[in-house]
Length: 269
Ligand code: NAD
Image (tube, rainbow, N blue to C red; front, top):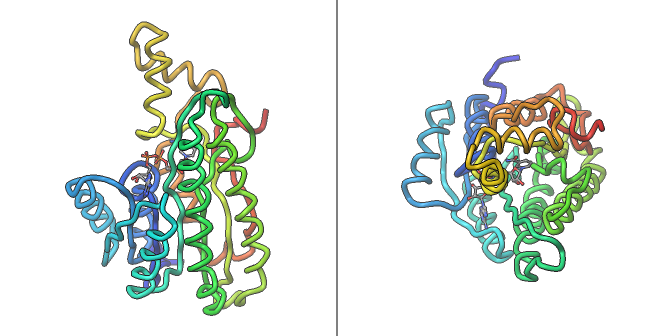
């Protein structure tokens, strides 16, 4: 199987202007796909992301602007994506976090986190999945979290949205399971569930622990890992991207409805 096994295919990656989503877009480009990206950021950040995905090997890297907390914006983005090319691969990676006890969690923060982490994935899937089923090939990979499998304190909307994303993905996997054939590649829907990954998303949590350790960032990282992640190693965004690429391979046609932990043993405990 060629390393460019996604040649001739297209992908849409949300949250691809930073962190894990950007690494996934690069890896799909390296595998031969034309990769549409979405995500927030300055014009410079968006241009830098496009350059990186192109340099990785994507022949085309259109950017589709949309604040995914707004269902109408998701719908209008998906119409533009479909006009470019109905995506063969859909990766829902955009996500946000806010930590506070339930009693102190602002109601608007709950609404925003659930809208971005869960409802946006429902909207992209409801608009992209029927085309995949019709064509007999498709890969949906939703970036959930260990927090889609187990809970932690102070993360009520995040944990609720990620558990919801795992459930939503299983329903979609069942509905699409019989589409296509071994030859066409089939349609699969899975979640990848990372533990700690070095990205801007977790910086506030590192900083809080670093402050408690007298300002030592490395001590903050060690404390974060010691609490939950037995490997005591962070994942890199590229490590998560490698799992996503595997799920897109033809031989993964029967790997569907799964929530795959990449968490250094966090959820084995
Ligand atoms: P990140 O902050 O580096 O990237 C988040 C991306 O989502 C950015 O591109 C951002 O622009 C985009 N985004 C945020 N709000 C958006 C909105 N309203 N509309 C459109 N795009 C929006 O974070 P990351 O760590 O790369 O997170 C990516 C995904 O991985 C998230 O779903 C997160 O929950 C998940 N995750 C991260 C970790 C970790 O340790 N970093 C662990 C488990 C799961």
